[in-house]
Image (cartoon, rainbow, N blue to C red; front, side, top):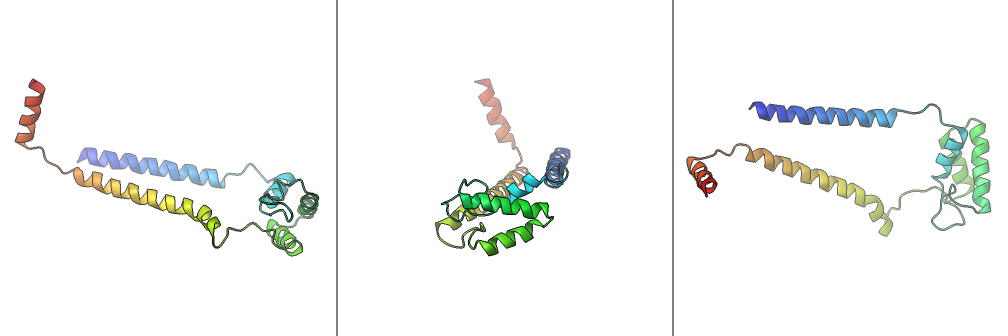
Length: 152
């Protein structure tokens, strides 16, 4: 019984440390983001209007350079990320990167979620099986078999 409690206590401590590290990592910031960091963040969420498969942040097209300049000006004016994104999407329709709602693209967005759920279910099933095996009693016949095997 003591081993059982010790094992679960170790798992509990591990879970608390993991959750604490995730919370600290997710909320910790290195101060206020610079103008260039904000511009990069916003433009990485916008699709280049003339390029295939590139964001405004990655593209060297003239229109992408113009959009980056526009975003930088609006960041310097103190507008929020949402306001800037809304303005750019209004001026350049179809530039907002959103996950596709159908087709092959949905697989790219849904597959990691499905894999995570399947992995969590598999771990849960495995833990339940391990827990059910803990109550197996060793019989005298089992001990005799082991002793006989050791003698050989």
